[in-house]
Image (cartoon, rainbow, N blue to C red; front, side, top):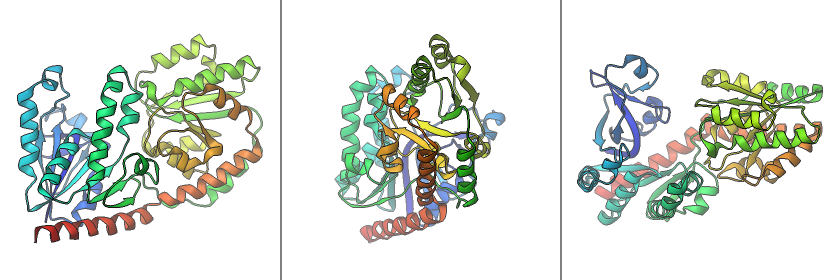
Length: 397
């Protein structure tokens, strides 16, 4: 049976017709679906990367399977003209409708406009589909801008519709997305973050580091520095409050791409620029070493699903704090969680750090991260997608 995979990610194409994806997908990810389906047709948008831009293409993930093809969706967000074009919107819908055929199973990744439309057509046809919930549209839009606040309610309703009518649903969280966007069908919690089994020596080394610690505490956040919803500015404000109390023994390291001017200006304005270190983008194969150099990880975001960086930090037995957003309370527990935007609580939590509390966090985080080991997740995913494949085939018999 063939599979139609619907999402609004962007795919590049070179002069020879080879396809390239960004960080969200790779050949390895699509191979998970090819274990159950003969061929995948992607319904995605075309990337602006030129077919002749070999340098940009080399930084993307090349799809190597001949069992993957693509149908291009119009990019409604490319311009205001596109966004308000009724003819383009009709074409967009027509392409989705024409590709939902009896011989294809349908998987959609949501939140996405294309996923909501595909879910509507599947429901109308009585066709089973699988919806992959990878984020919360309410959180991402409401905390983004005034325009986002206007779009958030409708996006919330669309996501609710997709999950409610899905015959099969996969969530990247254990509880959060399930509560906000419940499914009316079979469901499974399967994170899209996968880790290799961690060596217990990591925990021993972390506990030694905590016990040896005497002096400044190095805090870190791994996230883009040019988007306000990642919340690094709340930590910088907390540093200023601590400094006003005579506590300047904290250093804040930020790993992540984007223009850091906004955060640099804030640090200078608040008089803590010497405590804030901008380290830029760090290749993923060097991130674990970066985590090992920290004393505490903090994820102060205003929106998250199940944050990869936090889980990877936990796998290094790194003590961590996070905002009460998305799946972070599931990961850390109430003792390591603060209300979003609450600088005062961040200050209190940093002031309350002790070797005992950090050792306890290290042990708890290392243990919790084991739930994200690749082998465990792969088995759970394989079994669930096999069940969906079987049900999809039976529905066409």
